Length: 225
Image (cartoon, rainbow, N blue to C red; front, side, top):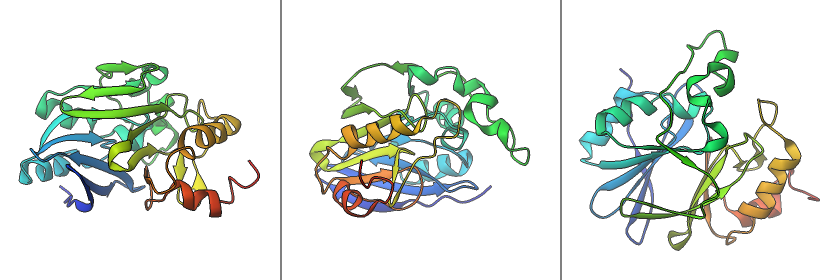
C-alpha cells in the first residue's frame, strides 16, 4: 500500500486545506477541514486505502465527497472513502453515467491502466449556486468545457476555489476528451473563474495553485479572449 501524507497549504478563518497529488498522473486530492475536524473530500482519484489511513490518522470526519468532474483520475478512490464513512458523493448531472463507464470516464483509453468503475453518485447537481453540506456552505459554478459536468467549488469568504481541470497555472484543461469543447471552456474560465477576486486562490486538479490575477496577466491560453 502506498503512503499518503497531506500537506497543510492554507488556513483561513475556520478552514484548513490539505492537499496531496495521488496516482500516476498526480491528481490533486483536496480535503477541506473545519475547526471541529469535519471535512469534505474533493476528487479522491487514487490510493484509496492510503488516503483512508491518513484521514483516520488525523482523526478527520468526512461528511461528503465532492467531485469536480468524473474523469477516472478524479474518482478512483471514491468507493473506498464513501463506503468507509457512509457519506454521499456529489457530481453534476451531466456526468451521471460516467462513474460506471470506463469509456466515458476515460480509463478505457489507457490499456496500461485498469478500468475505473464506481457506483453512481448519490447527489446530482444541476444549477445550484450554493450547497449546504453538513456544516460547510459552498458556492458552485458550472464550468463545462474540459468535460460537460465540470464544477468549480467556491469558498468565497475564505478566499479559495477548487476548480478541477478547468484552469491550471499557466494553462487550461484539455478539450479532446468526450464532451470537451474549447470555446465552452474559455467561456467558463472567463465568466466563472476570472470573475473571482484577483487574489482568490485557485486550487486545480493538477499542479500548483494560482490566482485569477496571475492568470489574467500571464496565461497564454487566455490572451485576447
